Image (cartoon, rainbow, N blue to C red):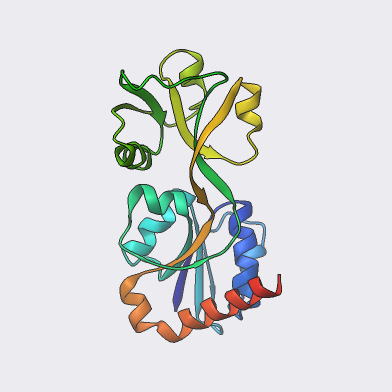
Length: 208
């Protein structure tokens, strides 16, 4: 059995369609129920839905052979996995945003609110900028509005939430998209199945 971890939500459904097209279909996954694990013994495949930020953990620790995780998760947690393919979907960017008209004063420590502490630390370390990280888990946009931080580091898709809160993108750190990842041992022992998936999905992407 090839164990595949999919991120819950629209992205996971989109990605499942790619696996299905690659010959790893599992009709029961489309049934409207609360099951967490779906198998198709004929195809030798088992799927399960996971919180997007957890997929890389399941793969790194061998509970899943392959999975789909955002580049943001891979950069933040640096899991011990193989990154096989950029799926060119779930596109957004990791960016620094600040209130409109913000000017950075390099003479003082910059207060940065984020849920991506490692990405923010690495980014500012590469510039030699001294920062104070304020780790938050939700509604990061509130931090600069309430004076908790100077800037935020967060994922930006359309930028609508920023605009509505009088914030704007100040710098783009890195583009983000969904990646196909594999457990290192699985890639060795189940390479035939995994390479078949990679080849098929790469071909699907070429066809558009």
